[in-house]
Length: 281
Image (cartoon, rainbow, N blue to C red; front, side, top):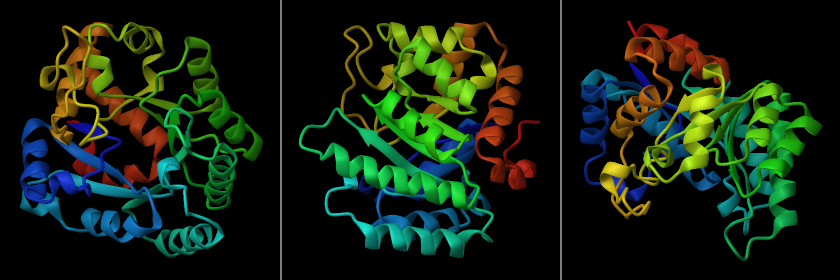
């Protein structure tokens, strides 16, 4: 019924029980999981996981994206971009390949070269444009700069993951054609700005995500103090995120599930090939 539009299932935190995690997610009501890559070195891993046939064993169906994460930009250069372009071209006939991502800018973590990040991000947006693909965006402390490149290059489809900007920044993304991803941060009572956005934005602007194993929700952390503990997040927790979103907006679960499916397909059109498995009934 629910789609987790951003989950790093290839992370080492899942090495001991990855199949059990996808099975538990499906049992909780998760029908699809989007796996973004973070570097050339894990392109093969996310592709292999998406093709592992987890749904045949009772797990949620997985699809994947290819891209270079801003935290992985040190040491990345033109050869990485060339390999990304080559692998994207080779993957276009693969229905489980759905986007370019995770790409973007991170101006929160110290020590990253802003100019180098921006160059790599801009070049990846151009690849998305050239192949007519959506993007999965990392926008930490960089909402304006990430948006500026989208507008300059002309990419108008995808998801701004873990969105935590202002209402005006959100409006610009939405008017440009992007969806905004909401996950564990939404579940904290003190996350007033995020919760306000989730409650007030047009429903068609929103998709759900976990960013598992990161951004654990309030029930795995400490909601009283707004602290995210190092508890492992899992894709099954997107069901709880959906519950919180429904409560904030006063939308019944069946209506919300249908809206989240429509929004996910609008952001990532290649998901439509899996409507018989992913779409809520």
